Length: 193
Image (cartoon, rainbow, N blue to C red; front, side, top):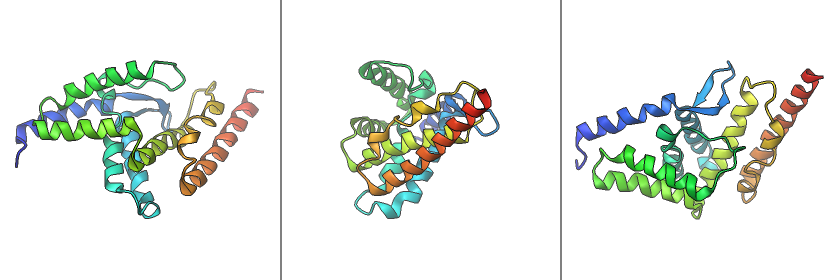
């Protein structure tokens, strides 16, 4: 074993921050969703999609899902509705990620950083699947959540739409999610009249 057990424990203790890092989404009970919960459900999403993507390494997709937001442990989640320069956001997250993996051996740290880079590069089929899952899981949570009265469901109808368009199964799932989003928007509009 090339990883020091104490380093593993220290890394996992750092990751506890993800349980306390809240996203701009709410659970069905009205509690803020954590980054850890989002990443976990993304990995489960990838798991159930595995038979649909025989050409992809779906175990790798699950790993991408688990690492894609690690930097938010220190930096927190930033709503997609807030404009920010992509390069600035990535640089901030990478600094946080470097801090998180510091207790690990160089091979382990490099493996996690490489997955994060792959996700953000969006070039591999695995990263394209993970990116589509990321956006769709977010919208599913928004549709399930007990959101504030002024929640803008219409934003979600375009949010990440192009990321699912290259795959028939992802497109079909996206259509279902969009129908649910439209229903939530209509319900909100009826309540506000």
